[in-house]
Image 1 (tube, one colour):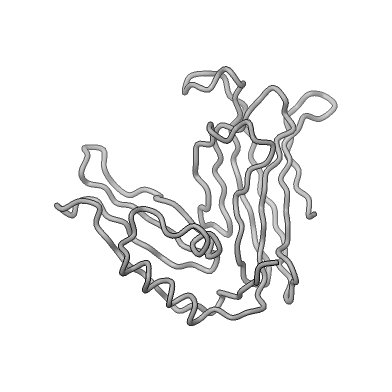
Image 2 (cartoon, rainbow, N blue to C red):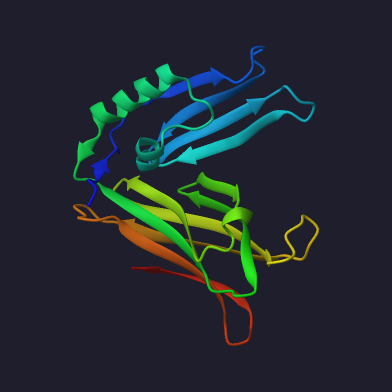
Amino acid sequence: MSEIYDYSSIPEFTRRWYLTESKNHWIDLVVVESGLNYIGTDWSVQSGGGYMAGFQSFDEFFKKGPINNMPEEIHNELKQHLIKYRRKGGAGLLLTHKNELSELVLWRAFVHLDDNPIRIISISEMGNQPEVVFFDGALPVGEHNIGFVFIFKKHDKQGENDPLWKVRADFDFTIESNLKEKKVIEIITSRDSKGVIKTRWTEI
């Protein structure tokens, strides 16, 4: 079992790096309680502006490394910053989605944790997987909220103009202190007795 850490007392950490020599496209990194927010700004195209460039839990950062071409010096600085201020014995969450709709695949997912976007992705390449992980990492003890929008399409109909099915919901949950393992919450999408698509969530 991997160790669980408490990142709730991490001091503020923000950095910026540029993706173009002309410095008209950049990434701002912001450390929040649940992980790393990557916020992009791109003025290199006519329709440019700000956009959500990604999110990583602290666990994902340590396991897989940074994203968005983070410079090596910022990578090392951030890693040492997190290691210095984190504490052993924290609490965490594993959030997954299970698709029980045999005729549909999960095509888009928009997931927020405590008002921070943690997944805004196309998952056409993962749509046939029975389970998708949305969050795996540390969270502060206390009350939290998950909000999501899922968009489903038929297996053979995954173009932008093909028919789609959308479900949205949000729910609250509590992270207790002194967890020996991460809390596991599974969101399940299925049809009810009348054939209506529904979502439910359960703690495993």
